[in-house]
Image (cartoon, rainbow, N blue to C red; front, side, top):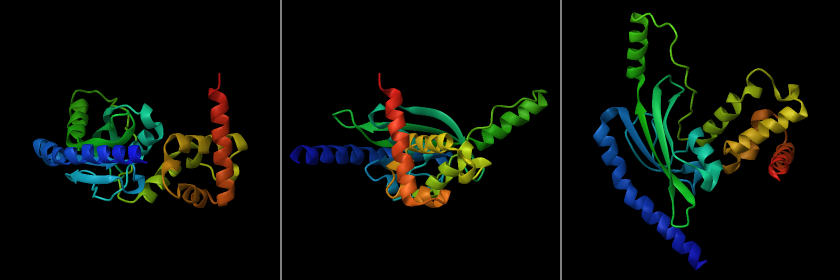
Amino acid sequence: MAADEALGAERDAILGALKPLVDGIAATFGPVCEVVLHDYRRPEASVIAVAGSVTGRAVGGAMSEIGMRMLARGDEAADELNQLTRTRTGMLVKSSTMPLRDSTGAVFGALCVNVDVTAVGQVHTLLGALAGLDAGPAEPPTTTFGNDIGSVVDAVIDAHELRRHRGWAQLDRAERLRLFRDLDAGGVFAVRRSVEQVAARLGISRASAYSYLSQARNEAETATEP
């Protein structure tokens, strides 16, 4: 218990030392930049410091799909730098997410930098059109940034390719297990009460959701065994 308390105090100290940097980095890059400090020990309210308003985050807000993916990877998480994504409102954002580690190497949080590059993208499109270059860059994925973890979980479920054109009843067993396996890999089930939320979103019972999750994890473990 003493070791756990010491590790918790160390993590608190690291987060405390980084808080002043949040304002400093955002001020350096101006109004197009947002810096967010996450404490992954509280996935549903991971935002503990924020400067800038690119994605409208606030202290006490939730992580995005990017954060949930990193949370799912645990100590294997690595920096995800300069990723282009689009918000639900259409804003083009360049995001960098850098995991924070304690002295044991365990990931417990992240420092995220989001830059609004919408204007840059518009200029790029205009210049391409003027130069006769019809083929533009691939459309970046849409990411839900919000203060409510429930909206983020719902967005991850609805964005899955198996959910776009078919309902739960139209999926066979293999597809249902794949859906749960992918949601698990995306960090959805690291969020408190997410199994109940997934069940409600899919229109199935909580018992069925737990059963499919258990089967999906068992199959994933079997597949990775030597």
